[in-house]
Structure formats: structure tokens, C-alpha cells
Length: 159
Ligand code: S3P
Image 1 (cartoon, rainbow, N blue to C red):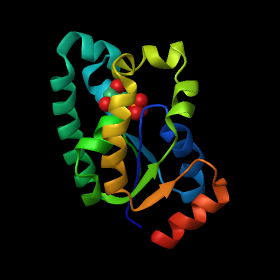
Image 2 (cartoon, rainbow, N blue to C red):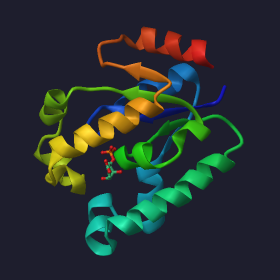
Image 3 (cartoon, rainbow, N blue to C red):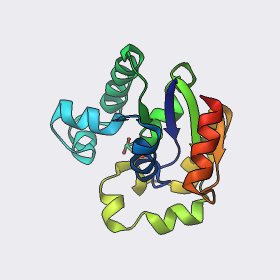
């Protein structure tokens, strides 16, 4: 099986889905955000404040090559920008969590927003731009209404 790559907007539920899928697909999780946080030893909000977004995107470039070098398949939990800007199709089966913006607004409460520097900008505009990109990259599109069993079946068919 190739890597399974979860992409989608902030708050679309990539990390939650990753933790549900991981034991079922028997794939360990590789989180692009956590990898950067561990390396820099700071939460993402702090990395953006201290070093800026460009620095964070360069760290994402490095993470891309780390993933390429992995020798066994992983479930890749991508930060929202990683899925949009990196060439994720080179890495494996790309699964887009296509959640509506109204639902995203509901999920991004104050606490969740505080962790995400870009959640304070013009979300709607970013959402529209990103949506097109995610859509183009997707091998599989999930709408958020599928059961876990259905998702597993779809992914096993793609393996
Ligand atoms: C970002 C999404 C975040 C994180 C960073 C930038 C983005 O990840 O990588 O704040 O550009 O959309 P989540 O999608 O897990 O919130």
C-alpha cells in the first residue's frame, strides 16, 4: 500500500480521521505539523509569530522530502497549506476532506483558532482558493457523511 495522504482545509477533521483510520488500516500517522513543531520546539502559532510564514513553508518543503524518504507506508496528516502547496500526488493516494465552510466555522472555535495563525485572516477567500487546489489533487473526495467503514472500503480499493 502507498501512503494515504489526508488533505483539506483547517478544521476539516484530518487529524481526527487519521486517528480513527490508523489502527484500522494498520498505518502509523505522520503529521506534517507535529514534525515541524518537534523540530523547532515551538507550537505553530509561535513559529509563525517568531519566524513568519515563509519560514514555516520552507520547513514544510523539508518535511515533504522526509516523507518521500520513508520506506514503509504511512497515513500522512497534512497541514492545510502542506496539502495545497506541496506535490502530494507524488506521495500516494490523496484523500480530500471536502467539508463545507459553514461546518468549518462551527469547528474552529476560539481555542482551535488560537492554534492556527491563518484562521484569523480572510477565511472565506482562502477557503475558495484552496478548495480548487485540493479538488484538483484529490484521488478520493470525502464529504464528511461517509461512515468509517465506507471510508476504509474506499481506501482499500485504492490501495
Ligand atoms: C495551515 C494549516 C494548519 C497549519 C498552519 C497553516 C494552512 O494546519 O499547518 O497553521 O496554511 O492552512 P491544520 O490544517 O491542521 O489546521
